[in-house]
Amino acid sequence: MDPDAVAKAFVEHYYATFDSNRPGLANLYQDGSMLTFEGQKIQGAQSIVAKLTSLPFQQCQHNITTVDCQPSGAGGMLVFVSGTLQLSGEQHALKFSQMFHLMPTQQGSFYVLNDIFRLNYA
Amino acid sequence: MDPDAVAKAFVEHYYTTFDSNRAGLANLYQDGSMLTFEGQKIQGAQSIVAKLTSLPFQQCQHSITTVDCQPSGAGGMLVFVSGTLQLTGEQHALKFSQMFHLMPTQQGSFYVLNDIFRLNYA
Picture 1 (cartoon, rainbow over the protein chains, first blue to last red):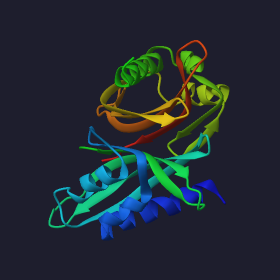
Picture 2 (spheres, one colour):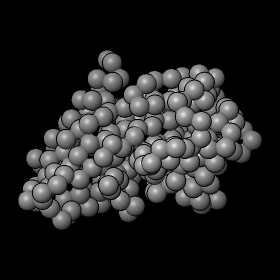
Picture 3 (tube, rainbow over the protein chains, first blue to last red):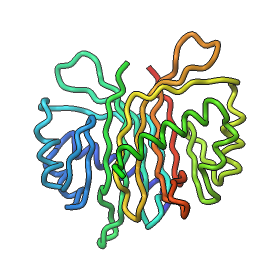
């Protein structure tokens, strides 16, 4: 399957889950997964999902502007995303960049091994 | 050695080389290296350096705002950078995000296996 199409499909699934069912993100991380969120380092699916579900907003919508991907070696895929994040009730959307390192699961899908998120301030 | 310190040192070396001796970047890539520059995919040190040395400006200065890093598995390191890029003669600096996947060399240093660069437009 075309790697670019795989990356795009994963990213759309990730943000759709984030925006509609944040606890559902637990399926996309494993024990060895790492998240750096605005400089804060978190490890393991449980802690990562605890962090993401405790962010100080109820509802949000991610809009993806760019998706770039490359094979990372060892069967993994690097995905680099930029976009905007609209929080309910806020007038202006935030800009963000995020990178994922996806690794294949035994079921033929992917999970997030590495995840780094940064807001892009004006 | 502290991974964060290693990442920070590599990034500073990379942008110093870029800003003062762009052709010298050839030492930081290998034949299997991949660059995606504003959506354009380039492979191999020679082609990558040809692209970077042909960018339409004589002089530039990168200023780094944030550096995040995580181990990528298989001995590699993922580095996620945001910053600004001032082109000589331009009034306003450009904002950019860039990710590197660094792999160790036999000499105890690192080279760039994966490189993805995106400008962050206002």
